[in-house]
Image 1 (cartoon, one colour):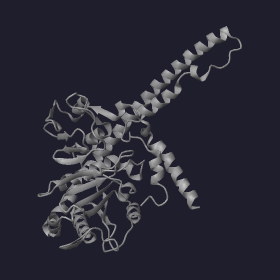
Image 2 (image 1 turned 135 degrees about the vertical axis):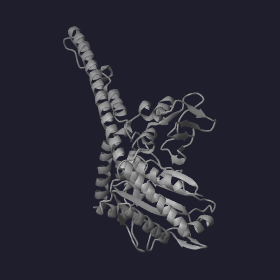
Image 3 (image 1 turned 180 degrees about the vertical axis):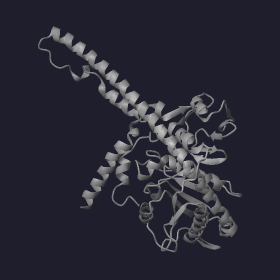
Image 4 (image 1 turned 30 degrees about the vertical axis):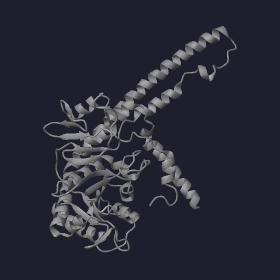
Amino acid sequence: MTNFCSRSLISFFLVNACLLGSASLASDESSQWRTLTYVQNAIGVSHYEWDGDSICFSNNQNIVRFYPGRRKSDVNGTTLWLNAVPDGSVVNNTWRLAGIDLDFLQIAVLPHEEGNLRPLRVLLDPGHGGDDEGASSKNPVVKEKDLTLTLSKKIGSRLKKAGLQVDYTRTHDATLSLADRSMIARQKKADLFISIHANHASNREACGIETYILPPCGYPGTADGSHARGWQIGNRNDYNNTLLGFSVHQKLSALSDVVDRGLKRQSFFVLRETSCPAVLIECGFLSNTCENHRMLKTAWQEHCATAITDGVLSYARKVDLLDKAVADKRVRDSEANKRWRQYLASLSAHSSNAQLVASAKVADNRRDAQPAPASQRPALDGLSNAVASAMFTGTNTAPVQIDSLIDFYAPGKVQ
């Protein structure tokens, strides 16, 4: 029964990955990359500056910097890690940016306009708890599970005062599995999921704040060695995840004496299995003595809680405009896909007509003519590949790796 269920589950996700991640078949470079001039126009600047290390696009509203050969970028002073390494050379005018990164930048990151505050239901998730203490330090003694609960309560109090609804995955020292946390988000019908954590590293000098959201379908996480996964539940919120993550991280990284480690992407369980927009925040390193002492101070906790609250509120004021922008993009993509289908249909009709004429001539010469061999028939297989590569130019343009999907959803892998 277990093997049957596993095979059924894998089959279900394979089918859905092919349907929902059809962009995986995109191989046309025009749908995956944007040229230097294209990016410059999209950001709305008249020129760029190249200093030999980075390329900067700036105007009176935004300053965006990219580093050729690296996934790191800076947006208005906040570090944001890209989904793909920019390609080409600025000097040779061959530099280009992945289309998916420009999409996120234009729609979810750069817009400054805010609207009315949407009264969202926020689920705060204090990391770890109970038998799972998380990271810890000995001097002074700090347990991650205690620190995250304290911070979450401070954040919750502020969000409630601002008019948002707040729930918690736990309000005391309780043991919860990762699956429990995602299930609570569904049960509470949360609009946002905010998971609070503290970091730890073998390198005692490591420090700073980092914020995580889910990678898009087919793209690896930011950490070295991460591999691309297929479509996951959280990918339905790719644009919202980006807006939420950037809004929160921008506020956190602006705190005094904070090292900005960037908005990153990783396929953590609570990010990939939670159906609402979700973010995971690492508020500092317990393994770093200076940050450890700082995180114990009430003043720092208050500042941190206020920054996260301000980020969530910024999201709540922008989400209506984001939803409209995403809907408009889908309409444009649908219209472009329709035009492409019509174009391919005309090519197919023309090819078929040409084949009919050729067949008629052969029939005139040979009354007993047999069907033309495969090598002489119209090359329609190539057209089907072109359809796949051009029809899907939206968020998910990288290949869905079927072998990765099978491995990911194999028994015991989803943890």
